[in-house]
Amino acid sequence: MITKFLLKLRILPRWVIIVIDVVIVAFCTLVGYLLRFNFDWEAISKFGFLIGILINSVSCIVSLLVTKSYAGIVRYTGLKDGLRVLYTLILTHSFTLTINYFSKIVYGITFVPPSVVLISFLASFLFLFQYRLLIKNVFSYYGKTYISRNNIAIFGAGQMGLITKHLIENDTRSDYIIQAFFEDDENKIGKEINGTSIFSFEKYKYIIRKYKLDELIIAVNELSLDRKNYIVDVCLTNNLKVRTVPNFKSWIQGELSINQIKQVRIDDLLERESIIIQNSELLDQIKNSVVLITGAAGSIGSELVRQVVLYQPMKIVLIDQAESSLYDLFSDLKTDINLEYIVADITNSVRIERIFDEHRPDIIFHAAAYKHVPLMEDNPHEAISCNVLGTKILADFAQKFEVRKFVMVSTDKAVNPTSVMGASKRIAEMYVQSLNLNSFTSFITTRFGNVLGSNGSVIPHFKKQIQNGGPITVTHPEITRYFMTIGEACELILEAGCMGKGGEIFLFDMGKSVKIVELAKKMIRLSGLEPYADIDIVFTGLRQGEKLYEELLTSKENSLPTHHSKIMIAQVSVPDHDLVKSCVNELHDLATTEYSGLDLVSKMKKLVPEFKSNRSMYEVLDN
Image 1: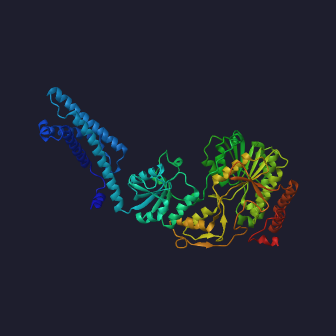
Image 2 (image 1 turned 90 degrees about the horizontal axis):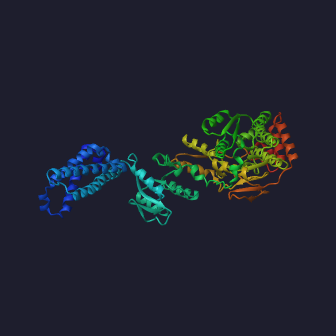
């Protein structure tokens, strides 16, 4: 009955609020008289308490009309409404004291004793504000109960969890009921926050069953990746939706919005702690320098631009042959740093030389490359042209124009390559490393795995397949990959450019490899669907040149630590420059003539003996 009445009575009429407020003030005035005269009813009657109550009530009506404290919607009561009630009562009792003053002068009578005024003021504020909060809570509880409530728990009973609780409870449009908190802090477990109990997450089965939970919100600023994955896995196994509260830094103008509490994404579960660049020389090296970035419109290149800007270079030269993507970057970037946007092909030596001559770069970050394995299997001429010849042209001009540092972005697919793409990147590594032996320029290489969210990567591909209703296509049930964020990759590149003295190949501690089929299942569940029931997973077989497992070192390579715990240096034998240069020139001649792909790949295999093709037409060359 109460619930149905509340749903019909969406907002209390203003006259009802005025009547309630006046009645409460009148009652509190009576309480003041009772306390003032020690509950001696005969003395109270002789004093004429009814006139005093009438005066205070009329003063209240006038004050209400002046402050309009009745205008607030009671079930939305907040701090401002409390202040408005306070102003109303100050005005009410000021009117009463004024009437007392004049009645004392004119008639020699005090209608309302000052002690009664004080008691009435304090009691009135307590009752007026509390009844508003009571109505607010009744509306919130019964309204949500009657409609269709979602029982939720919050992981994290700290400041962020408390803010999240208040935000949800004060949002009258939501149908969420906070039933419990989960915590890892043993000092908080067993206690309560505003009537909501705090439990250990190890009791999740009991709590989920007891409160019939529908959802969990993770409201912890710092939570390890393993712990976050465990919590999400528990929720998905128990059919709980999982949302997360963003970091404090992401809050809009320092305040959390209900719309910022988002579904947990697969990216959140693959990220690791960001690399913290500890080398103070980085700012000194980049500040007031001319920095040239190739592939500047790509995933890695564009993030490099955004990070380099923070170190106050004199100028950044952005080179890319993808005109539309470069224009998008031009539209997005807002900075006072001088940015030169150049549409150019790195294999055009004449054009590249003119760019070097005009801008005289101090540091080069070379991120331009063809990277898609199946496409490069079918187009080995282009893989050689871009990945090998393009790198050679840039590196040669870096040496000619005495560029201080040349940092090449490589890939883990260059290790024991099974594809044309991987082999082309390994040859580029070899050329750059060999060039460092007798050069003013410090040539440095970085190797890392797959980048989350990059163009053509597996996660955006899976997201699109889920949106289209499936199926998700996975090449092999046992295939695994390493993942890192774009931000992490670029931090590694910057750190390598800073710490590198020349000739190094830097590796990144990639953490644990991820089984792609498990990744697909988790993405489906995070979308609120069931694998194989709502979205099917189909195995299509390994593609040309594709590996089951990626590596960062060959069997003949070892690694050395650096001052950064997650960055290592590969101990790689440095190839003879004249030999590599001769082979690269031969590859260039083959790639720019009518020679077949077999001839070209055969030459690549001679230069990179560990290059063994996999599920490719070039496997015949390995026999």
